Image (cartoon, rainbow over all chains, first blue to last red; front, side, top):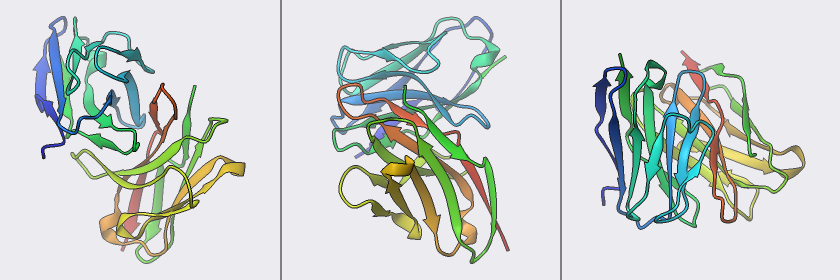
Length: 111
Length: 114
């Protein structure tokens, strides 16, 4: 049972490049989340999904897009990366039993 | 919107001393509440959770937390700190119902002094 898997684990982008982060969960969870973690700011919610085909904005959605075409996958896209998007990104999923499971994170640097 | 406040971004205790990390939430409807721990360069690990029922919740590694609705608080405690407890701790709240937004506090870095 892999839980929540994020790919890639590390990435360096140039300003203006695009990329997609993949989050995959094998627990049949309905709810999935994308966060960014920056020093002193905790985890801030970017976007989340309450089910396949649905997405919603979180606290800091600007500059990001998401899709949930399959229940097990939640994709986070950066269309035109900016240095301000340098961060560690975490994906999480949860069921109706409420406990959230996290991936190991993606460390993204935009230069 | 739901918010979670953790008082004290850095807390230092001596080994063997009481650990107290504070967390308050803003929702008028009590959400589900969690404490997570994060070790350097790792993901988040669940320490304990409160959903319904008993307000004193016991978790892993000797930690416990008490849900106090009247104070909108969910403080984390451990009677005796161990060096291995040094980490960053996050309080989180999950709104019930269809929205299911999971909101985190800004974190508390716990240092344990020998």
